[in-house]
Length: 115
Image 1: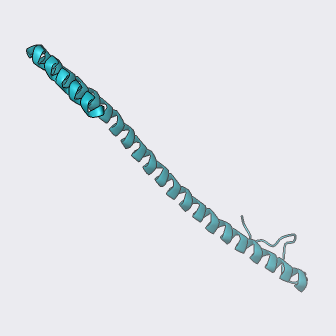
Image 2: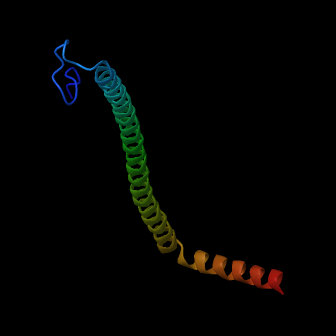
Image 3: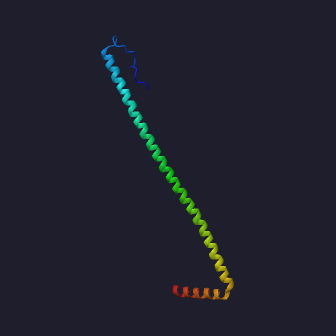
């Protein structure tokens, strides 16, 4: 806003009342002070907004990384389960009687410990 012209009159010097001139000067100073305060507040709000945007973007990046890790961990766990299942199946096919006998012995021992 242009605060260089006095409010309510066009002060030419000789026909101006000194009291009115003083009031207009005070009003102009008040407007200039208000404008400076508003400019400083706007700058602080912009700075706070930028900071909050950076924090939010950083948090979103971290959440994205965590989601990527979780997806990778689930895939790895599934792959590991498949490998263990395949290995157990191959072992059972190679020695079925040994596996059954071992399972019976383990079951018997667990039953004895439990009673």
